[in-house]
Image 1 (cartoon, rainbow, N blue to C red):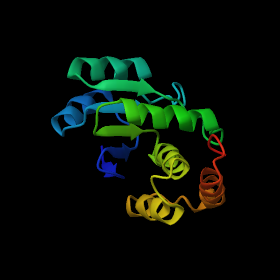
Image 2 (cartoon, one colour):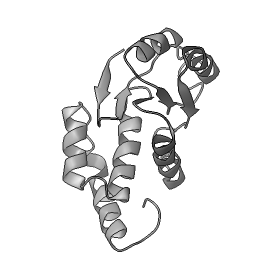
Image 3 (cartoon, rainbow, N blue to C red):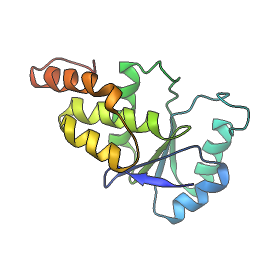
Length: 152
């Protein structure tokens, strides 16, 4: 399992297994967000087994499943709220880490915490190319400056 740091309080990773939870706790992580729907692949562990491992390790755990290509505004809001509520540092994961990074990027730009170029650069330094969502990020940045509600 390789974690990639996006901020002081958030790192992302590809799929983890229950045994990784103990390692995450030993590395100082205090929360885990699972962005992968159960049953997406035959070899992935069930979310409940990860939730159980997290509880046993004393970590907070949330399951915010994102179906590839079907990211909805509400999911960005739920992810952003989870980051604000959960003790950090947080590890968010999906199959490769891209969905988790995308959720962070959309939420960070919408909230005004990061500008579009900063988000793209941070993602790229972690190994994630978010150029395909740049138009959406620009739209979010514009709407958040004008006071529009919700991610676009």
